[in-house]
Image (cartoon, rainbow, N blue to C red; front, side, top):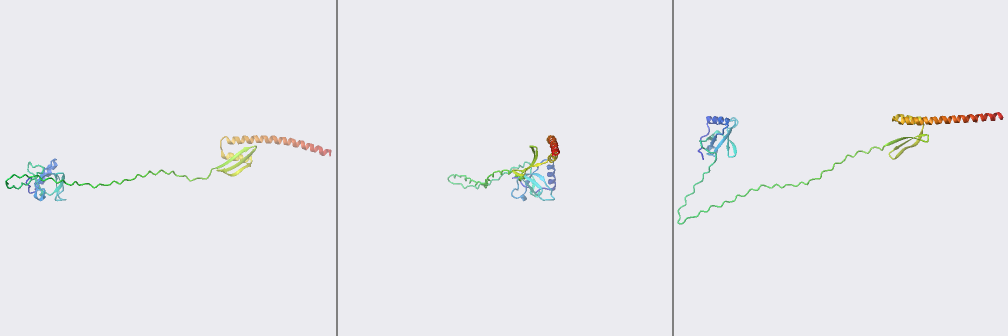
Length: 229
């Protein structure tokens, strides 16, 4: 154990500050005011602000770095080591005996090993992932179908919604059929309707011509009959 001094003076504190600035860590010895560690050696690693606390001398002792006041430490003499030397007490003299005594070493009492508290891990059952639920779209009204048809010289219109018939096929005039097709404005459909109407018009004109000729013959026959009567 190194003899403890009387604490650091102002000049010694300044010298330690300069040594720290130069990258050195001066050794100090703990004084009696430091308590049980008096006489042991440490290293100054930092000087904090003395205006904040009286314990501004930070000393590394073993694995710890603790703050002390200048009165708790003194400049260590040269050759002082950091290793703490334990002072063993001298055994008391054994009075001489007639026969030599055999001193048996006291068996070491095993230190009870401190068991760390066991933390039981709670097993969390993994819950099955929830299956994604598809969004159900609201069911809309059934589709509506309007049919314009031509067969056997007649134009008919029918309407149906889903499987329900709204209007049975009924006859419409060719002009109305043509107006419906014009509203749809689908290329090719209007031309097909116009061709059908043209063919019907030609056939109707031929039939009208035949009827006029027949009517003329009937009127001539009727006139002859009137003259004979």
